Length: 393
Image (cartoon, rainbow, N blue to C red):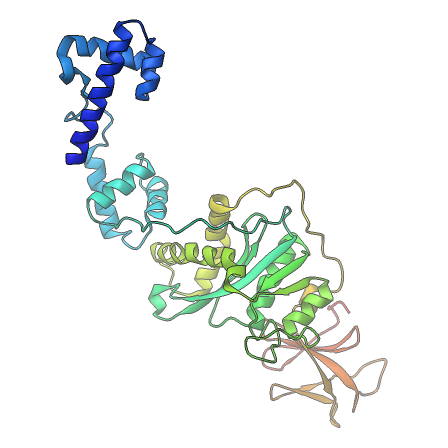
């Protein structure tokens, strides 16, 4: 209060000095107003009030009066009640979006935030640290993609943590794939890549952490072995996609910020939608959440066009799968994961005893046996033989 009084006294003194100069025609109204940090019109208006009421006329007449644009009290009470009963775990921004979308709410975000803070329903945000310049985004979509996983209590009803695997474009920040799994790994990476390539095409490079399903790291915390490929590394190499390893958390900062946003939004929306299963959550992600997220947070690329190219080649499923060579036994069978897979009779060869073949394990748990580009047999997840005649070689 004392500081306010001092500032008021300084303003009155400066106004009276400018007023005196204005009356003596030594300053124009615009020049006097500029000295006081106001327009000439506003200064002349204060001169009229000063002549009529003295110093009291300089005070803002709005002080102590109720604003005609004040938000309706009943609407604020309704908003507070909705926050307490249904949205208490939402951020204010996310809460305001839901109010507008679901509850015919008309008040702006700032009014909502200030009202919630005044009611002590939310705390004021901490002051941000010093600004740090972010890495410039790639100019075109498809030049660089991120893939990473985040462990969190995504579905509150399950009462256990799950991994959310996200594939994200660097140029726009758009999510191309988001998948909830029990544990992040090779199969979840394949699923995310398959959805991305099927929907958009081949891209230039993939930036990931040094998880064991992405890279082989001979020494903990050291450099990755680019000569010894994991299944994901082998698939990316076959597709012609450059695989880039991250050596610092700052390198994945953009991805970490995305996960922060997702952790503040996705669990709450799954709760409102009454989703209690992983399958239901994945459907909601694909059909509702990801499109809404991209519409809200994705940004235009710096340049027009796209770096994605259409995929053309062998079936994508036969690239994005686990592949290993096996030697066929004397019974013309291949042993895989304790399953004995029988190679059926072939027209071009009597048997494959002691020959080296390639086994594919697909994300759905099924298998196939290949001799070079030729598919010899396919099996379901229990090892049961399936007809291969309809399958492309």
